[in-house]
Image 1 (cartoon, rainbow, N blue to C red):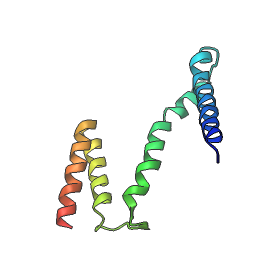
Image 2: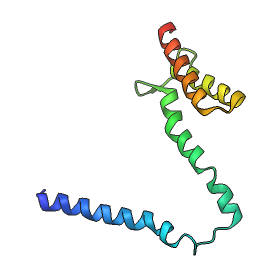
Image 3: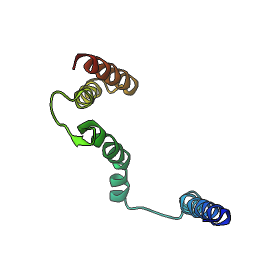
Length: 107
């Protein structure tokens, strides 16, 4: 591939990204979503985070490891319980990472 090809691809991808992402900012007031769609979209960030985090919690070395010997899974469950009890996000991060570190040392 030539340098022009690579730079052209970067410029075109940048332009397409800006156009698709800025459309809602420029024309968002003209787009009216039904209340059910707005309600469904409110779950999108949590679903995306779950899709990113869950595979990391249940895999170890590329293999699925759903056992009590998996410190990442146990720390994730502990952090979830902590968040359900307190609803404190920063505390959840600290509790989860502390529990993960402790479990790594113990297991």
